[in-house]
Image 1 (tube, rainbow, N blue to C red):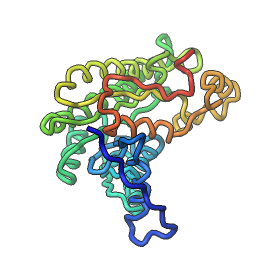
Image 2 (tube, helix red, strand yellow):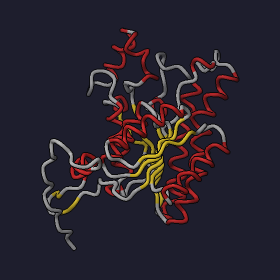
Image 3 (cartoon, helix red, strand yellow):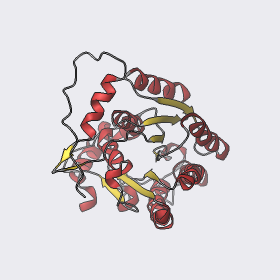
Image 4 (cartoon, rainbow, N blue to C red):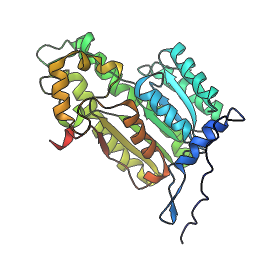
Length: 297
């Protein structure tokens, strides 16, 4: 059966008449006729829980998801920034809730999931963005790394993913569907080399690739898709040292020839949008590089 194409989207008014009009107009860009069929990149009706949502990749994704019609929970350790981010989206017509969470704490993560269910009634999408470098905590090459730095880094980047998935997947099992997206890294696919030598971080991001595959095959019969995104160097606060070091910047430019340097947070958000949408209904278990060509070398 051929799906009838959707009617053409009206032009976006220059002055929205209601608070939700701007977001609604943006959403029309995400459900459109394509070659006689329809794309389902709209997230209309879906509830998305994003960790690390107060800034960087998490916030860029929240904005893109909101434009696609999702209702959002912005979870972050920085409660004030999370509230500000959610308020900004709500002012543009989105339905967004800020929740404080420590993703390394089991109780805090469980409370985050419960708050989402209490407020929105369901969770369709989990995008676990929260994580980061442990370099300042003692992560580094194995012969230099401290035990404390190693443990801190794996707690933040791997334990947190386990805790978030464990809290959310039971709700998806009850509903019989869901999309889980982990934020891994190009370093989880290609190693870090001399420039990116925080081995605990590389180990954690590599483990997320394995966790993605294991969960994807296990939960596929329940229609829960599990994928990972592996960004290259993205212009976020975590990667600030790249722009301040000419030699490192030149290395990134060589490894990411498509962009000739760091990518942008919205590059990753676009990939997350696709994986969260029903356009990706046949995709599970992948670790998608968003790396400007790095993984091709």
